[in-house]
Length: 142
Image (cartoon, rainbow, N blue to C red; front, top):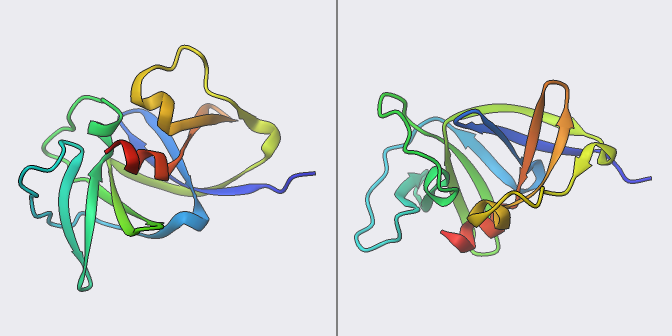
């Protein structure tokens, strides 16, 4: 029997995403970003995280979602990668949820574009789907 997994969850539009808790360094409120000239559109800028410069990735841009409402400032899910910490800019932070492997389904064939490369499947929860985001893949696309 495979063990249950825990995911740090967040929202983009009405979509509910999760990243494995083991990959998450911290979750923080909005941080001022410094633009990076000539960077890909998905790079939302750089943030100063207690003296460490961290690249902030705009997941809306990466997932080809419409731009966020300008009245809401994005939150940061800081994940650990082989190359260091990277912040994922999200609309809202959710909870840490524990899911059973039996609730997992692979992504449907109808899922297209870059989302297909980053979303490795979904967990069927009560009343909603938790889309499992592969953070490393999201960073390679950005």
